[in-house]
Length: 289
Image (cartoon, rainbow, N blue to C red; front, side):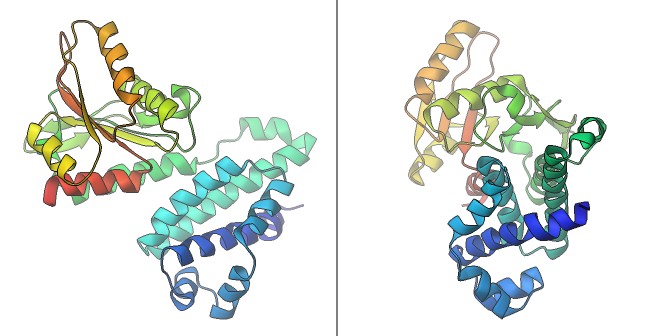
């Protein structure tokens, strides 16, 4: 079976069905969905005539992990909501290719050695790269970057350890009058912030993204006024005490932690969100609302 056949017969129909259902839930009309996806309105109606469970079950019957599918669907929806058709096509192509290769490698024993040695673009890394690029070009973040620098971490699914979490191998730093992202996005990047997100997901399984920004009481008060759950932690006498206090605070499932730092630790604010889109929403509120 050709890779294109796998994509056309097994991957694309259920993935498209799930995306159409998601867009419909976001308030998109059938006509608007048809225009975005380059299909007819009757086709959209046909996809919507079957429940979401039907499409999930199709993928499940072919051995796909539903958590992975849901994670892919979230980043597809994030791009679709921006109605950037070219980016959506490229992202969908990357994801369909990844899932098609996964299926081929699973059913064809002779292909397994080839699959292990073949580099495939990771759609989650590409999504993270695109988010960082957009964020840095869209917003003036310089006043939010602490002396130690910032990082943003993202877990496509509930992480088991920090190797499941994507972050920059370097940091987001203030350079002159602007900012610059240093390093590459990698799994296990930013061990400190990744560890904090990992702890956060123990107590709130919905969290998938985190960022550290400069400590500012005004920001904490502003977010509290916007009904975000804001808590404070520290100051800490030792690094060990820091981790104990952070976990104690995270047990209360805050969205924002104002950490007062301590010996060798700069005070910062930690932001937690269910996805990168909601993280961007919090940043926008801090800067503009």
